[in-house]
Length: 291
Image (cartoon, rainbow, N blue to C red; front, side, top):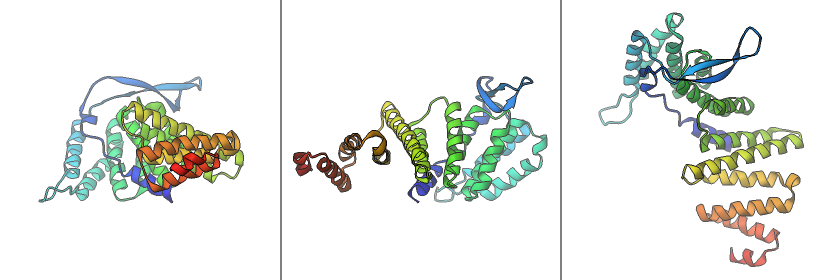
């Protein structure tokens, strides 16, 4: 339940791509291997996804109206998106989708995904993002944003294996893997560990979760911001679960390091209690008394 709520919280951070994602017409690109496209020799073929493309004029005019409707505010200056107008315009595009260029369709699917998500129609939102990713002219910004959101939506649906698969694809295509991306992967791996029946599989997933969370912390430090509290908590949980593989004492010392960080960065009573308990198990009575 905790992970499900956390996944929903993360997914709520999704924001539709800004207008300049389609307005630029730079002919720059990056080569990304598309596993769905093969050449005549049945080997993988590289597909070039550009960083920016230009919409057809008729489509651009409609998308401008979509953005204006989404950015509508009420008389008090509060956000008041006009989803009725948005859906009317998107339906017009949908009816003529076969006559649209691939890039135009990808932009349309992007906004459909946002609309469906706003209505909590998560399955429809996921399909919209899959449709976007299937478009050969979808741009890099649209692809990476859609992959990340699609991964989150899979986690909301508790399909952690598919979510991990999509998130790993996002990591392959994005230029920089963020600390948040690593942490999301770590949380998914941990959940997969709790779902597995085989002890060996459980431990393998806990190791992957730990590696991902360590990467999240290192990346956050490089990005010069404080790693999040729940990242450390999850790392401590991983070490606890891995005690049978790495040894009880080693697991305790690793947890000790983490709780010493937690009491400094996020001083809460429960962390002092956990720290004191570990001191006691390690026969460090003086430290235990101090805590």
